[in-house]
Image (cartoon, each protein chain N blue to C red):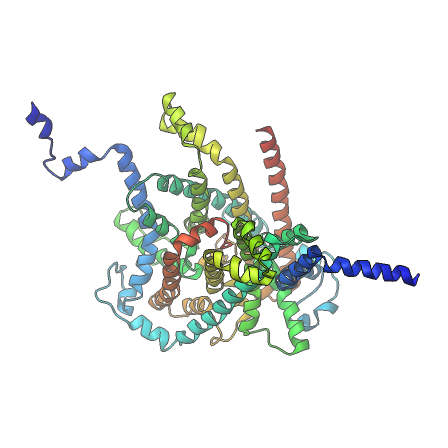
Amino acid sequence: MSSSTEAVQKYQKRRWSSLKSQEARLAWRLLLPTAVIVFGLVIFPAIFSIWISFHKVDLSNLNDVFHAPYVGLDNYKRVIHDYAFKWQSWKNMGAYITSIVYSFVSTLLTIIIGLIAALLLNRPFRARGASRAVFLFPYVAPIVSVAFVWRWLLDPKPSGVANDILMRLNLIDRPLGFLSTPGLALLLVILFTGWRYFPFAMLMILARLQAIDKTLYEAADVDGANEWHKFWYITIPELRYVLGALFLLRLIWTFNKFDDIFLLTGGGFGTNVLPVLTYQFSFRLFNFGVGAAAAMILLVTLLIFLVVYVGVFMRYTEEA
Amino acid sequence: MTAAIYDHRPKNFIEHLAAHMSWRKFIFALVLFMFLSVILFPFYWMISSSFKTYAEIGGRHPVYIPNELRWDAYQELFGYWNFGRNIINSFLVAIPTALIAVVLSTMGAYASARLSFRGKNVMLNSILIIYLFPGILLIIPLFAMLAKIGAAIGFEVQDNLGILVFTYLAQTLPVALYMLANYFRTIPEEIEQAALIDGCTRSQVIWKVTLPLSVPALVSVVIYTFMIAWNEFLYALVFLNDRDMFTMPIKINTIFNDPTPRPHVVMAASTIMTIPIIILFLAMERYLTEGLAAGGVKG
């Protein structure tokens, strides 16, 4: 028996010193810090958040979270019955429906503007490089700066730039409260999102555009196709995968987005979305359990999008 | 006859335009002009307004071009609002985040690009999951968790810039690792193998062969993580309470929400915060655009 353990030990020793296992150990050592940080500050908190959403956690027991009383689905019920969450009217759709409308419409808008910008920059002209750099400004500038500039440009007073221009053009006769009128506010928040995030779509589309085989267009010219035909029958099919991936990525990011709406409207006037609602529950009312429940509803909705999208998209690609 | 052919020089500006412009070119120029003005006007407004006086701000009509460059807003910003402190705080958060992120992600990226080990794919996939998680979902458990750990070990969670650096690392490391790993894979493995055969150890190979070849990628990772930490709003909003500990975005939010509106001061602070980022971006644009398309700045 002792000889067999010795043999095993010998074998293990040999194994450990072999180049391959040496490599594996080095790999784990190199990955360890990243793994610890990501696990400790992302994966564990994510799981912990599920737990919190089923418990009563507020300021009084924040220091003793692990003994928080279990409340079942109460937190979820509170979120679902909250007036800020529920459908009210077409002008105030509640955070859930607003989130869905906001993220779908602004994702679509972002991609359309990005496509136009990419087509624009895909043709050679002087100052193309400089224009591309300028086109990226909205995306790289700090969100706080650009949100507050736009908020001030859309100031409800007659001295606001948007009001001033529209009144000089006689399009309106009294100043509008752009970000404080339900309906209009949501529209403007969506336009802002398109303005800020189109460069990301533009870059991805531009990279794909430049990889399209030029002979396709030459063949189309020979066949007498016009610009529109070439766009619709060559460019769009070639961009299909990039547009699909972009849609999913932007949809996820927009659905998760907190800063833009929080800074533009604070979630008021029919623009409240789930991330802002989660913030309000957690750090205005200090009811962390209800906040976590709102965040879980957000995550589950995101997963449903993902499953539906992958299902539809995969079937579509298989057919193609 | 020949004179008629050569004599088609335009007689005035309109004819000159007509000779050189087709409808397609005109529409192209018009769309380009619209894009540029809608993008640049807010930036022009931000910078020009930071040089206006309070009188120009509070008038009946907006002042499109300030009469003269006035430093009132900047004086108030650095005097009354003590914004210098907030600039330092932003650097204190962004520089360590960028440097630690590039070191750790280089290590992890090398391991996942070059070395083989069991569980690699599971590990890499779980690191990329962060793309899906909303920041707002993580902040509640993080807040509770860190409060608990802080009480046990004895550090403050509130107003602790070190905590912010850690949370930013968690947000930036996965993407940084992913970008660098992709870059390392483009370096021919034969170069490294030649060095290994010549008797270098793995760490010597990494230090003397791989890293010098990856400088562009390393630079862009440093800039991305710096930009993310510099711009970040939500975590700083939740974790910082003391005005002297605020990073710039939170301080700007505070100035904006002051009972007496002072947009010119907000614009001055925004200008100070935006200009370095734009300059950094323009200087490094060649390296950066590829990484942007790869999702370097999540958002």
